[in-house]
Length: 192
Image (cartoon, rainbow, N blue to C red; front, side, top):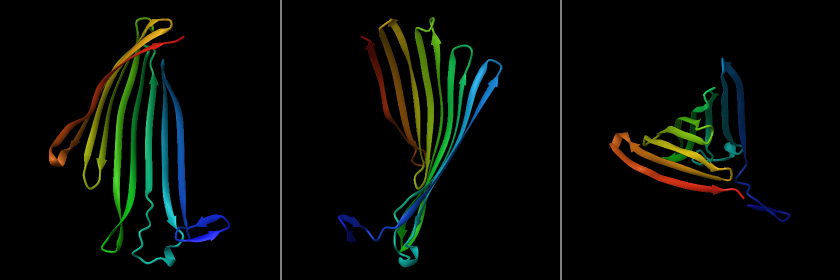
């Protein structure tokens, strides 16, 4: 540690983070169905500028990551709108084992499908979604989510929304399954 002016500077820390991001959006049309396909790639790589001055047993505590995401949103002529998403994030988390730096990979993969549909001359919006998140590392686990509900326009300035959801957590290797969270939410909205 050193003091420069009124600032304290930690001379043990000298690193750079390289962040890379790219997104490509492709509008698609098939008859009356309009779609957008979005591909996103990203990554963070951390560099220790003091590697040559450090002992090999030093833990550089920064996590590198890589992410890919593919989204497809669709609008159908029948008032149906859907969004399908796939994403995967990989983290390389550093730790020490027997005075050696090791990086443990954690990979999260998510797949979700959501949609909404307008009914009753646009007075009601029905919504639903299903998602699955898969976590892979020292312990593999999954989280399944199901959500559904509807919004209803009662009058010009009064609406109601009802939503129900459940999330189920499982660890297949231990044959463990439990409800992570669940609930029903009723909301009344009045616009003045």
